[in-house]
Length: 212
Length: 259
Image 1 (cartoon, one colour):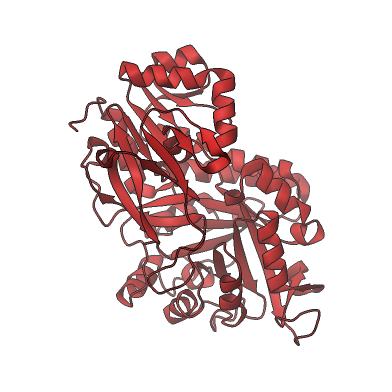
Image 2 (cartoon, rainbow over the protein chains, first blue to last red):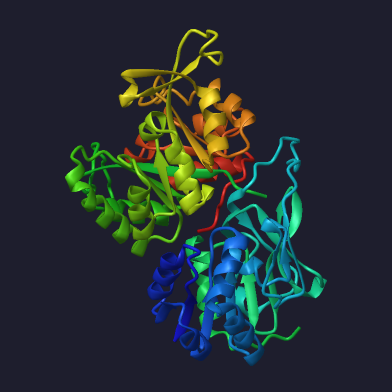
């Protein structure tokens, strides 16, 4: 059973629907025991880091996630769920879960495109990824595949080797990061067409091991 | 690099797509779910549903359409038409839409933008705006006025000022529809579109007037639009979304080419 962590951060249904489409059974839950006992965990999220962390610590799900990470359960962070796995977020200046050392940074307001125009924030729409450290969850993904992003902040792990893939938007930012049994992506695989479904499917068969 | 988006727009009345949409392929032309899936398979980057159901007691039909679409397609889609309150928004978002768009409801009650953004996040809130070209004046300095009721009612609001205000209120995106260009197939509005895109920090979707791939190319380059809404040009199969994207790609516009 896959637990989709429910913490009032929206977008749970679309993750659930995408998993169902793949024939995978899952449960949207905030029940601590259910999350602890799950075979794998999807940690989605839309919204602000401050409110999300407040909700997670209020319900105690923050510690459950730390425990599941320690015990080796494969965990997939999506969007906001890929940010709050770091130590700290510039958004609301919030301490986060601290599963991967690093920070969440905001896009500077002055980013420009190659053509010289001011780039819009949030970074919203389809963009590609460049794999830096091959990972089983990205198997079959090619440079032509694009994914759907909506965000104003991005994960910035301390160590280069935690960066699985990067994306270009005025600057090069880590769009997929990973450490041991945790893989976290800034884009929404559940809204990224076939490429996204492929990533979700890969996650559903990943054993949580990854040669780093 | 971010891709420019091609977004087909479907008008839905009482749960059925309207307009004399002709499809050669095996698609039920009246079924919004099948049409959405068809466009999804064709490479649409997003889909817009516009609910033109007149009677409000039939709105749950649209919610059912949204729910069924969400089970079939795995790209973002938005729903507009008849959304007046945050409860309306919640119903559509819970049914599986990524975004909701408000148009005349926001003109009549701008606070709905802020309320929606606070409740669901700016990324969910699209401001739809119908504009008409008028004589530039101190009140309408851009020369484009916001209109409602399908263009019958002038609001006295300047299009650029309204766009900036909506951005400040928390809109995450603007869909700019030119009433003058809409349905003409003679090209998108090319004056206000680049002006608006350059004066707000959120994406602008150009709507109204696509008749050729050249029109789409122009609005995504010179017109500075982040996305192009397409309706008749794909519904009547003048071009397929695949053809549009292949041609744009050939001409150097960054679009998503693998789906």
